[in-house]
Image (cartoon, rainbow, N blue to C red):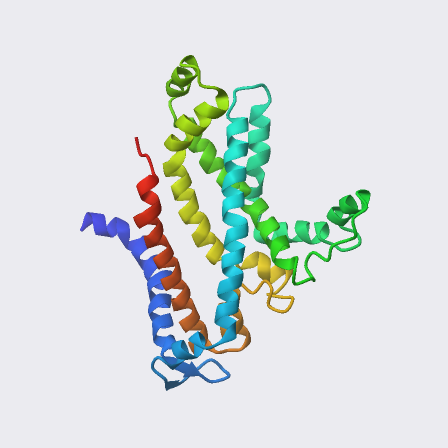
Length: 284
């Protein structure tokens, strides 16, 4: 009873903000609602069957998959490279570690303001740098061909601090004796990193991959603040489709069905990663 009494506050919070919304979403997914959001009628699986035949679902799935492909590998690779470079005990490395960790302290709204200025078609620094090379200005957020890439670029920067700290922590947990032994045996820095450090870093990279994919499928703030799913649905990721269906169109039944579809997709992806990718992880 003493243990449960300590757990009680957390269980109450989980019940209010996790379990109850989950149960309510399941309930609403089998109903349609009126324009005021009140339950109107029970429709069974009609919301799910309607989603499977709608272009909105497949477009949001395609956009989310591309967004994940653009952000997850790039973010992890940049995190590994930057952490490996600043893990070296040279003077001034603490300053670089601090600077590389700074994006983690930025809120989504603050980051959106910064990148809105950077992406500005006439006053932005990005188009100014392109103009120095004689390249025509790019409509970063208003062109369907570049909007998702622009959002992905901002997201990689936003997640860079988290990726960097996690990889750096993993590197600091690797015994230096192993790397030194490899160098004594004639291995160069690159070979020692690829054959000794990366395998020992694989649990960290596996964790980071799982978390990054889940985070990519839950992306919302930067899309809502910068493009609102546009132009022409080019950045309408899955979570933004849920938001638009539930809180713009007031179709809580369809929105709840979309949320459950997202839950199943993320769950399946996570199970596949644990079943397939984890076999290549070296825990010792």
